[in-house]
Length: 610
Image (cartoon, rainbow, N blue to C red):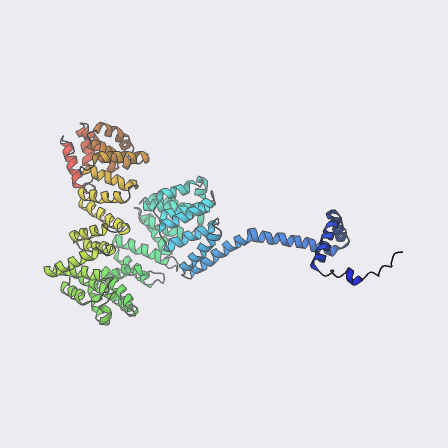
């Protein structure tokens, strides 16, 4: 017989009910019992009988979709728009550096926003190099191909940077019909014609812009300027009227007055010049750079008014040495240095002996040829380590004028030694000496600058190239372009000049022929490079080849001096001296080196280029 079982103990049965293993067991049993289809029908049944639940679910789905759209599409658009707005506010406040920081951060997040690139281009126009403005405007145009707005902004940036080929490239992306309908495009084309001194053509485009936009300063002021250059009295009168119309405008008045004052001066109309000078001096929009223009007119035409205006300027400019130096600089520019030096006597001596006033005073003393005063200023003045080279330069000029050879020699040696450690000072000092007629000293300083770092060296070599061009010195040009070519061998324009002057002076003719041929082949259609190669062939006694090469170019562009020179020599070298004579004799001697003149004389007299 079985013994009775003890009653079941509930506490024993549920002793693990609160344990983690029990919890997992219940979850596992629920998951095994879960049927998705059954749960789906339960949810539908729940929603069918509860209207509020249906509304809540639909509203939730809409909210999620709206948030997604806002985050994915609207938020970047708003951020870009807000960045543009903030940057424009900083620009209006004169804080371009803050605006640039805003734009840079916005572009890092969204580089596909053309408005941001256009704003970057605007900032480059205000503070940066023009080439950056063109690059940024181009980026904007690439993001919206075919959009006339961005293409025209790109074309305008290219025109301001004097990159005409790029401007035409930008305009080619716009149809002729759109160009005809765009006042911006017409203004750009008009400005291009004006810069080419084709004033009649410029008037046509500015008139078109005026018809499209209606009266406005951006149309009427450039149109007035071009009409002033016209020969007919009616056109000039109309141009005068357009500019005078805007002369009192707060935004454009100063621009109009500058043009009217310039025109009056060019025509020698003294009453009109005085009228516009007085108006410009009183205009609130005038710039500091306008001061010499209207002061010069007042000094010549109305001395009493000049003294009156000068007295006002003296009161406002004596506040700081920088302002005083600015006023003295204006007086130096208009030939009133003595008046400025008299005024300096009323200023604190310690300010006058230090930059910037000491610099302005030194220039005033140089202008009036007060060499003793200039020497005394450069001996006792305290100009500082960064400007001592100017003190030595002015001192050298004074010593040479006073025939103080010992002092001049000491200062020159000081300048030469200093140029070995500061190429920028050598470059600037050389330019000053050249402007004073001390050309040998300028040449020496520029060459010392050219021997140093590439940045300054390139500038110094550019100054030397212009120097030797004025002197018509082929050997100097060859020396300059040989060094430039060594620095930048991939620059075809530099290499072309190097080749030409190397052959002209009898240097490296075989190497030059190869270089000239390669440049011509790389730049098909460039008539200058073709003419250089033709000249190289002539110099190597291959005149027939040179003539065959350059004759078609001469037929297309017989006015080009470069082509005339190569074509005339090729003719003469082929025995056609009489045909070559009017071509070579027609060249402007000022554009030729003395070596080129010698070659022309030799070939026209039946000799070779040697």
